[in-house]
Amino acid sequence: MKKVFKALTIAGSDSGGGAGIQADLKTFQELGVFGMSALTAVTAQNTLGVQGVYPLSVEAVNEQIDSVATDLKPNAVKTGMLFSSEIIHAVSEKMAMHQLENIVVDPVMIAKGGAPLLQQEAVSALRTHLLPLATVVTPNIPEAEVIADMKIHNLADRETAARKIFALGVKNVVIKGGHGEEEQAVDLLYDGSDFSFFKSKRFETRHTHGTGCTFAAAITAELAAGKEVKEAVRTAKTFIEAAIQDELGIGQGHGPTNHWAYRQKL
Ligand SMILES: Nc1ncnc2c1ncn2[C@@H]1O[C@H](COP(=O)(O)OP(=O)(O)O)[C@@H](O)[C@H]1O
Ligand SMILES: Cc1ncc(COP(=O)(O)O)c(N)n1
Image 1 (cartoon, rainbow, N blue to C red):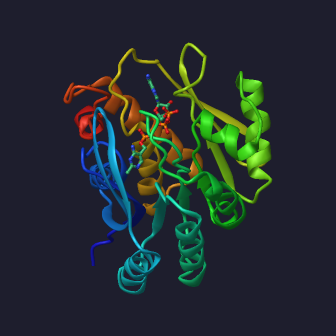
Image 2: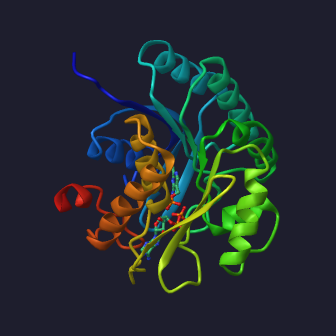
C-alpha cells in the first residue's frame, strides 16, 4: 500500500490566503504531505491588515482535533494562531490525550500590520502548557523576546534567548531572523547542545505576509515525512527562500509569498 504522510495544522484562517491555515495547507501539499486542519479562529484579513477576528469556541476546537486524531492520525502537528489561554489549554490537553508527536509550535502573537492574534494573558499558558510538548518552537525575534523575557539586539542575545526557551521544555528552538539586523536572513536552531545557523540572502521586498507560517509548515511537513529536525529546518529555509524570492506581487499591501516556487526549482 502507498505510504501517505499526514500533517494537521491547528491555526486561524486568513481569508487573504497568504498566512494561517491557508499557508499551512498549501505548504503541506507542495511538500507531498496530506494536510488536515482544526480552525481556532476566523480572521477577515488581506494584504493591508486584519479587519476582523472571530475566535471559535473551545468545544469547536476540541471536536475538530478529536475528529482528525481518532481517525486520520497525523504524523506531525503544527500550531499557529491560538488566540486565547482557553484554546491553548484545550489544544495542549488534546495533544497529550491523543499522544500526538512531531509538534511544531509557531507562537503567533502579532500580525505584520500590528493586529494582536494572541491575547497578552495567554503567553503564560503558552510557556507552561504548550511549549513543554513541542518538538520545535519557531518564534520570530519579537516573539522570542516575549517568551524569553529579554531584549534581543544581536546573535549572541539570540543564543541566550534560545537557551532560556529551551529550558521551558521544548526539544528544539528555532529563532528566525526576518526581523534581525544581520545582512543575511539568519535562522538559528538550538537543540540543547549545539547551535546551527541557516542563512539566505535577505530580499528587499514588502511581500512577506505569511513567511513565518509557511516556514513552520514546511518544517512540520518534513517531520511528518520522517525527516530529522535539522534536515527539516534546512528544507524549510530553502522553501521559504524560494517563496520570498519569486514574489507574486498581489494585493495593495504586504502580499503573500509564492507557495509553489520551491517545486519549480526542483
Ligand atoms: N526579507 C527576507 N529575505 C529572506 N528571508 C526572509 C526575509 N524575511 C523573512 N525571511 C525568512 O522567512 C522566515 C520567517 O521569518 P520571520 O520574518 O522572522 O518570521 P515571522 O513571519 O514569523 O515574523 C525565516 O526563515 C526568515 O529567515
Ligand atoms: C490567521 C493568521 N495566522 C498567522 C498570521 C501571522 O502571519 P505571519 O506568518 O506573517 O507572521 C496571520 N497574519 N494570520
